[in-house]
Length: 337
Image (cartoon, rainbow, N blue to C red; front, side, top):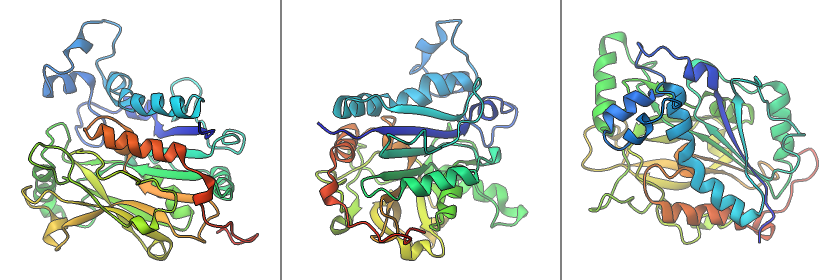
């Protein structure tokens, strides 16, 4: 049995997320009552108890976080250790930063960057020191996992904002998503500070087969030095997945490990208008960048929210059963950025 220890770190500020004004539909999670209405009758069992908050807190506690329970159970069964599940800012303790002490026994750190960009979550200097030290261990894996960035209008003029956002909305087709919903500020800031800036762009609809199941991805299997993709052919069918765009020096420090195809029958999207048909779904640090390994993938890769669970469980199992013999030799002292 594997002896790995896992930390699943949600980098959101719970008070800021749950306290978002419901009158503004943008850049927030849905309230539980909104989800019940949109997906009726799927979640009507959550209306039967007066103790269940019908606001955003209820959505986080009874829909969002439970999506990760399958991974938590499998990880505990494989490693024989419970997963360390943490929220960056909760309602009671305040800010829980990543520290050497917190990560002392952890060798698999998964940063679920489901934080709204408007909440401006950023790692402190101390946290970046801890993460760099974490990446000095050859056996350690750091997954940085932003979700989508839908409806970004920073590169378009105000007169076409609405048309731009409507185009993205019709492409992914998920009526539970508002015109603008931007996640991943903490994850992007971590990657930039590590010298490998990546932007989680758009919310692209991945290709599905005739049964609505995930379409096989394209993988650079020769680069998969940990065997994370062994016997894994698909991820999930989440309707809005980001393209991980490598920026600046990240192009020389990160390899594209997995690409997924955009659904060819989906409505138009600016990404596809530019000639792209595949989006970068998983990145991996090249040998020699860190002693440990950095990977970038979507937050939903650890959840059971959008099908493909059997293949996801194979991926999780590969992560948790990995052996250090697959790792590259450690860097010489002082070589880690």
